[in-house]
Image (cartoon, rainbow, N blue to C red; front, side):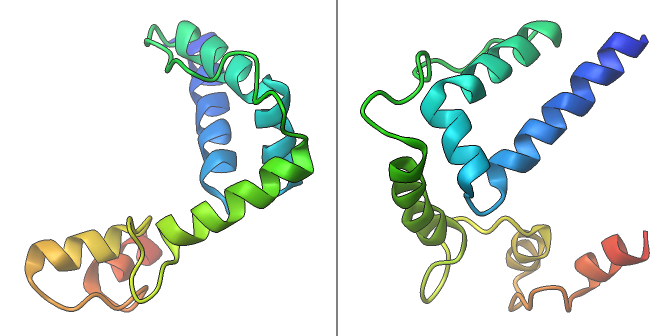
Length: 117
């Protein structure tokens, strides 16, 4: 694998990390302006992947702060939720469900393995 491939992969992981954090002004501004979509398309092309559609041109009618106020409740619904999130971003929760045991965040064998690693 050449240096350009490694750089594209690193940039992709960086974009994904930004995308899955709790939404802040940086993400909202990038999505609203179309910068996020441009970066995703460029990285997908560099990695030989098909880009997701529907994000072209940003989010017209939204400023970064307006979009931030729309993204935060959705992120909370998806990843925090009450009493449970719609989708947990933690491997330990998924693995506990597969094992048929109650998930305790960060206090289970799978999460401990990741921490030790």
